[in-house]
Image (spheres, rainbow, N blue to C red):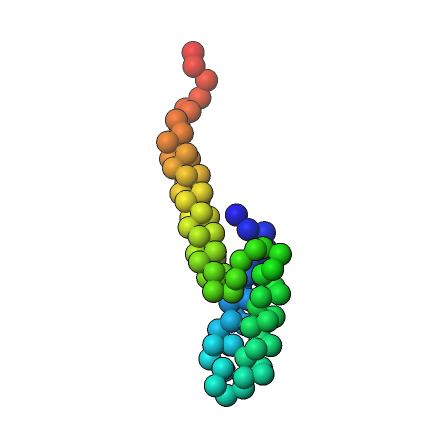
Amino acid sequence: MFTDQHRDDLLTAVALAEFSYRRQRDTPRLDARSWQLAVNHLSKYGIEPYEAVDALRADDKRNADAEFEIRTEMIDAPIREGPEP
């Protein structure tokens, strides 16, 4: 699971990459700069901007699976009705 900072960096990189993609025809210099910022945000994690969405999806799935396991453990736990005589 990611830390909040890791997740924030991924979200920022995705936004910058999306901006870069949508603005590439209108403002090539701004496009290049936003892509480079996305790359810089992700360099410490060893992934490229186009991989950031997949990383976020994988983390969401891990979080959902972990939450499901916790709920299952709570449901499967025996109910104790009090001390045995």
